[in-house]
Image 1 (cartoon, rainbow, N blue to C red):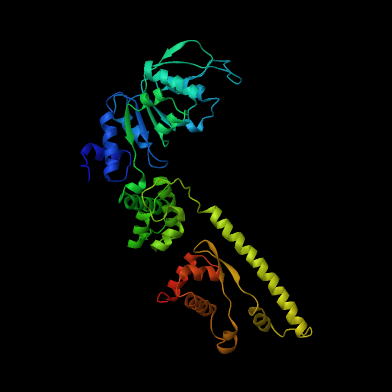
Image 2: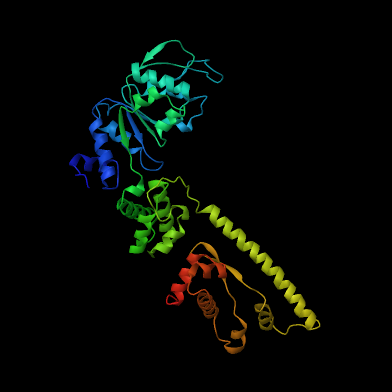
Length: 411
């Protein structure tokens, strides 16, 4: 069921560049706009990368505090030993290195809004201080005995199950109830349906415009692949993937096979579930592939040297008459050579001419040989492309590209 999008929601979406029309997202924006004028604490919950940071900005911008300061604090990024000083300030000499007094965020943002991201990461001692601020507006600087007042609105966010954190003793129950006076749930990307395609189009167009590259197009199979993936990293992961696709597939019509190359298999074929799987593609995968190819090349060269030495003994050290004759001798023992494919950015194998070409068709090109090698491998594997790629020791993506290039789709 779709929620009616009011002019105020449309304005908020445009103002904060929020893309999407799913019911869950519109409902969360509507809830933020409703609570904005009422000076209550808000707890925002959602998975990492889902876009929680937009909602405290909406709440602040549509509240009576909009002309005062808005400060965002990542509680998980501040060391435990300095978090109290960062939030509440300290006096000169309060600890080693405190060469002067300092205002904390709660004092700096007096009259405005403070956004505490990853609030579940706060130490228990800091949680007690925060509870006092929420209940009475009072705090004490580190190293001071003077009580200070602050008029501040707190909006907190977390990707943690707060009830479980309370049950485990990692978060104060009284602080949880005080923070979650109003609760807003930000939906994960996998539950937002066609919003995935809207975001895909935005990210690909933004990339093409920023870097002046030809825009990519996504065919129906590619769209289906994007919709069926679980997106454990949510919008942040989608943007990362689409930027990679926009770079390496610039100007092409992208298919499902192309998309799957950039996605970890662990998130494929989505059935509603939460799975925190980090993106493993890019450097680690490519580095492993290159190291393997170099290792194979080293072994191939060793084998080639052994065969050449053997040939020399068989011919009783007779010199080989010409470069072409040498190439013919080597082609029978050299399994692969390697070439840097600049178009795809990967290292791929190119198969040399076989003996049949040497004798039967001397005008046949390297491309003809490669096509014939791929055709035979496909026939041996009954057209199963993954097995064929494994046999040829090339990536599936390279195999798909070669199949299209040589018109072997019907095998």
